[in-house]
Image (cartoon, rainbow, N blue to C red; front, side, top):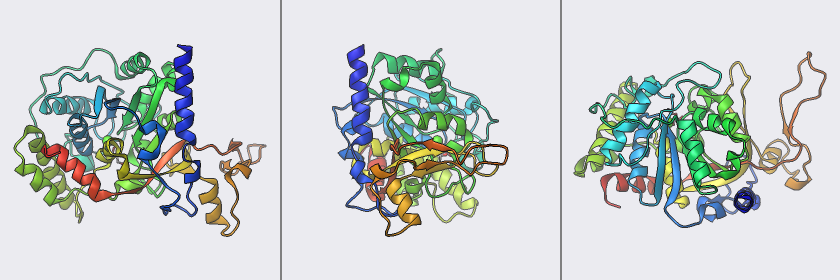
Length: 394
Ligand code: BDR
Ligand code: CA
């Protein structure tokens, strides 16, 4: 047990420190020479299949992400854990069950997760995903039942069963994950990594500041970002560059298998929904990109940041802030480059109010990146993988 824990800790350290040289030299614009791809990181090398748990709130793009994952032999999906988000749990749970039935993967346990965020009322995105969460695409009631174990407990049990082996792929609000971490202090050290669709360093989609998944449960997201689990953040910075097109849907429609037919139906409805809303482009495939980036690391370019979550703002709760000594400092003081190691106090919070006696709070005394943020995406390569897998061509 002790040696396993030690090994896990070493793996995490290798992951977090592997791309210290990868910090960019100016703002968010990726520097090809400095950035790393997912594939170059030690934690992403290894022998397939990879054990994963997919935490999700289906959701149009969640549904396609689940189908993609279930069509991918690189993954050993240990569980699917729906959470309230895009629509209430009463819909995300059966939608997840529908997807496992469509994919013929009823062997995968599906466990009901949280009905509401940790400390807030649930805000849904039915405006984007339709009242049924699948863009109005109708599928039969699932006959498969969820397992009896609640999602956070199932996550805990699976991670403990395979210490150091399980990657959490989270494509919804992080309530289930935070609850699991809160329930077991040793769990953090046993998780191999967490690949998240969530957050943004370049503005939000539900408010100008916040991306939806983090907006819905910022307190949960903060627990996750501060946990010490090696995180890869696939946020709006890259997922905004992935719009589903009519041509993609035509390829799916032409393929005669249940997965491609279901994906085409959901995709067609979602594109029409976007058009009716006046959008000129199809819906972003946010969640599929997180899965695809895990499957084929060369799709994403990553850079190190210390990421934290705003939880108290009146207008900004759920904003994800990326601290990087080199990128951040250069943005403010061009020409005054400093070595990251020379920066003692970097992670600073808001100015103190009159009610406090402190100087501005220092969130971290020393800059240590906790997240690899996806800053660029090879979109054509991503869609080749997504549409290829869903249509059964690769
Ligand atoms: C995220 O929010 C949800 O609406 C999508 O499913 C995705 O997970 C994008 O901000
Ligand atoms: Ca989602």
